[in-house]
Image (tube, rainbow, N blue to C red; front, side, top):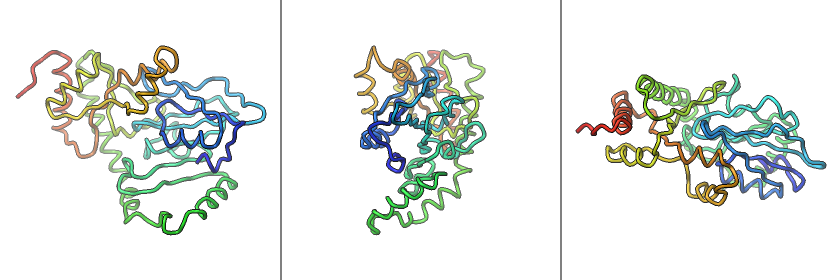
Length: 286
């Protein structure tokens, strides 16, 4: 995606904290200056600066990503920014009525991740003829035995099941919403952006003590988890007290509850009840 955009050392690439490591490495490989974008502490959405005037010479390139199935819409301003999109995290979602994958001049979706987890490779799309020509030139450089010639029917199967799988996750999130809404628990549910349609591979909450909740659920064989990976944890620790306060706050407070198509109604209610009992200080049901 970044290679076919012909970035160079005069360009400035703004990438939200927590974006794909491959994307960050690709930005650095172009020689462009990479500028991390902080996140909103309550929802995790990027806080795009209002002043995105490009350097002279050079361009400002902003990378949209959609982690945890939550589309991040482009801000209404920032007309001078060139928007690229990593659609991997929220395939099947939309923002302001537009499908994820159609929000930038170039978009990529890595295969092998939910909900396209039975296929391999990547999908790249662009509405710019010159970018399409560069993409084709890059593909022509790939040895034929390394090029993606198919994925054993995986991509076709993923595409055929995409809507059903996403709808099942949305229904699971709806069960959690209904279970938690009347309880007045000391816990915040992290809502998607109001102008988006999320895909909910995880259900995000912010309890008073995230580690205690994760441990309590693990004792009941429920796999809740932090959103941090070791690389991101290291990055935020390096910047502790100075850079990216919103991202540090968001990641330190947020827990992902299981939310996928294989969970039935009884299992989802079991998780919700376990969360309730922990936060209300009640003993676990045997």
